[in-house]
Image (cartoon, rainbow, N blue to C red; front, side):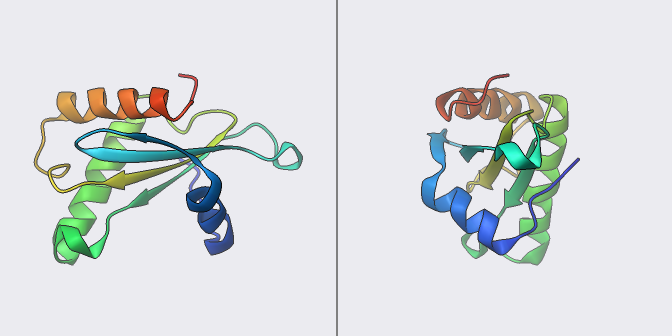
Length: 110
């Protein structure tokens, strides 16, 4: 899975990305630049409000698994997936449904 690693690209995504939100996650999407090609990338975010390092790592691990089940990374888009409070403890089917819904709201074509 290709991930976004550049802080400046992540900042651009948060600054000008299109947002889609559900009760478990927030998704931000931005079209990939033409010079980089059509391959999509993704970044997983779990803030300190969620808890300690163990909880944040669990949130990111759960988000990575859900992204893989939903067909990510999505061609033509850079996507940030931000965990919300109950993301780590929700069922996989609920998380997948929220991810698909948030992606559609953010304009990502599945």
